[in-house]
Length: 326
Image 1: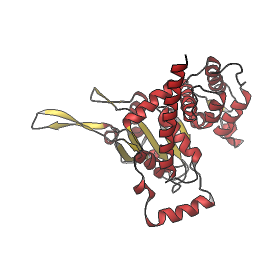
Image 2 (image 1 turned 45 degrees about the horizontal axis):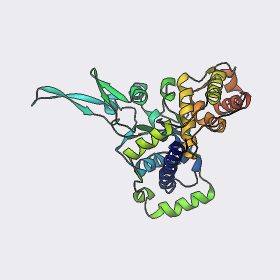
Image 3 (image 1 turned 180 degrees about the vertical axis):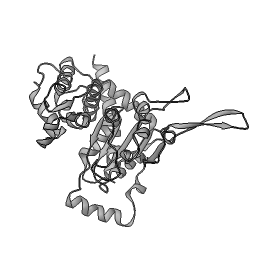
Image 4 (image 1 turned 135 degrees about the vertical axis):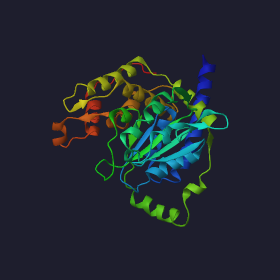
């Protein structure tokens, strides 16, 4: 029994070395935000998509670009605007007069890392073009389905809905993002360091790939093998189910949310070098994974409660499992 355990530990050690290198490359551009960088890596290992929400100018797009540069994968950037068409995202079939047949011209979604900048500035029709891509990792155009190459991650940025020229993301769209993070303003020391490092040149120019697409596929496969005990699975179900009956919410967490929470917990355990998930992993990820999917009741909004507050209350109220978890 000792040999498989040693092999697993060696795999996890390699996973930590690779993810530490990726985190270092991202942190060389985004200073003073280790928690945000960690959630980004969690989404990558969990085969999820990341939504970065905050005011303009705090480094949302820079974070997405830094992650893309740190991985030697194909990268496409889409600037979402009101006149962007669904075919610009998915692709379009064009008639070729020489061959007298239609040829498919792939859209921007055909890449390992897709950077969707200001996703909520596009119309709901264009936003809906991402639904099949993000969930099923395929694109259907004119009745023909085209698979998307793994790894595939959408890193989207959005401005707060109160800002001019934005459309609210539909519930189905938000539910397809594994996690949502907010950059926040940098600390004084980090902002001072940013003025020095960004003054003469962009740190993005110095970021070199530290992993390949094959490396990421291997890390994802290793993350899937992280053990989750039945009590921890029940804990995830209890938290998700509690969100559906709380009086502060008119829309609770979906079954997909529970799956995403479990995958994210696996990824976090792997990042910490553990081969099993603990309730602490679930608790620490509940807010970034669940909060953006929930809809508050009018009374909760009048009481100035946030979805984050509701999720934190659920975590405190749901009993934590005890007994053997590994």
